[in-house]
Image (cartoon, rainbow, N blue to C red; front, side, top):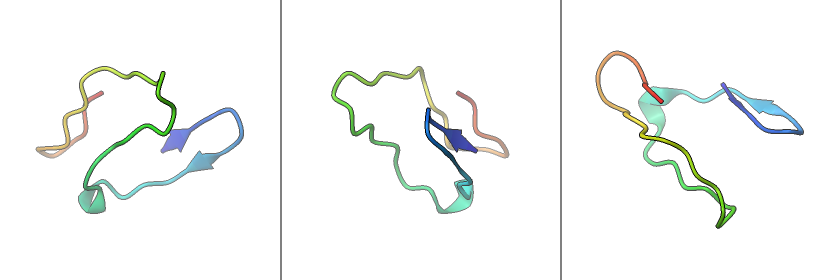
Length: 40
């Protein structure tokens, strides 16, 4: 589940290719998209 100030969005991790922030000031820690779970 992704969430921002306005809404929530369900995402299928098995179909996710990349995470690219639209805001140039956006930042997030390490995102691991391998294995049986996604670790942020």
